Image (cartoon, rainbow, N blue to C red; front, side, top):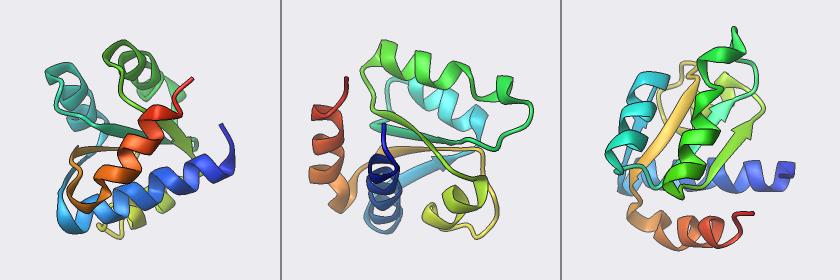
Amino acid sequence: MSDDAAQKFLEAIEVAKNTGKVKRGVNEVTKALERGTAKLVAFAKDVQPAELVMHLPLLAKEKGVPCQQVASKEELGLASGIGAPTSAVAVIAEGDAKKLVAELKANMG
């Protein structure tokens, strides 16, 4: 996926953070995916070791949840509203991002 797609995911996370609900961190995101509550997932490219987030795209695909790698933990932290770097974010309740999340889901490969 393109940088454009990554921007859309960040935008969806930002909107959902304000009007819905997001979970932050690899463990929380993994739990959200396993429980079927995640509507959208994004994870950072600069996570070390990469193995920490490698299972997320596979799990998301299995659950039919849009998943996107974004450039950095800082970018993800800012979008999710904590101002601290975070490795992964899941949107649990879309809020006003419902249309955007639906669009991203429709564009899934």
